[in-house]
Amino acid sequence: MTAPGAQAIQIDGLRVSFGDFVAIPQLTFIARYGEVHGVIGPNGAGKTTMLDVITGKTRPKAGTVRLDGKVDLLGMDEPAIALAGVGRKFQKPSVFEALSVRENLETALRLKPRSILAEIRSWADPRRGTRVAEVLEEIGLSDLADTPAGILAHGQKQWLEIGMLLMQRPKLLMLDEPVAGMTEEETRHTADLVRRLRSPERAVLVIEHDMAFVEEIADRVTVLHEGNPIFEGRMADARQDPLVRQVYLGR
Ligand SMILES: Nc1ncnc2c1ncn2[C@@H]1O[C@H](COP(=O)(O)OP(=O)(O)OP(=O)(O)O)[C@@H](O)[C@H]1O
Ligand SMILES: [Mg+2]
Image (tube, rainbow, N blue to C red):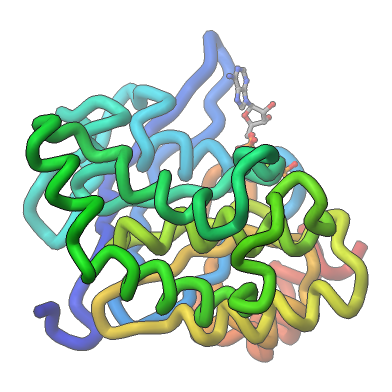
């Protein structure tokens, strides 16, 4: 159990550079359980880089990234960070096209390394089927459970991939531009889905350029500019903030 509002992820003094180029000079950032946290800002602001650091893909020059206020993720590799409860969705869906929606979700549970015996037991475990059914419901694809993922629409593939992440019950779920390339209808459905992802056991981080979408889903937004947080608060207030308007929204 986690205390409501407790820190899921806490970034301190983070510095990321690529050669001579400093993408993030010195970042402090907190995402809390029970919240959907939007991260917005102009192209090149360092949003994806921040996710890359959290997931272990990019190594920073300095700083700490703590999950649950304790483990420093920077001492861990990518698979260990994923196992610790960090799930991340990239923009391009990567579902197994030949497998059904249900099978894709089942596969997602198998990614934890375990003994073959434990693996076989887990397949027989009725809780497994229950979890798949829960997630199917959560992503709104129950009716398509037996459909091959390859014939799903773009939006449906994205929801399936969110479902695959949910199978692992991540403490921190991060979505990078989840509605890019979606129709209006798909974007609306995704907003509903993301709102339903809010849970006391989970923090959700969403990077997105679609401001109407962010306003619908986010409890809180951080505006990044050149790797610095220039605003944190409600989206409605970000829209009124002079600096935010100047560097991002006013364009
Ligand atoms: N591997 C890398 N090597 C060199 N430069 C990089 C690398 N990754 C990111 N950058 C640079 O770091 C800066 C931040 O990039 P990042 O992808 O984090 O921006 P972003 O906020 O996600 O932008 P966008 O909204 O366009 O996705 C950019 O100037 C980018 O060119
Ligand atoms: Mg990006």
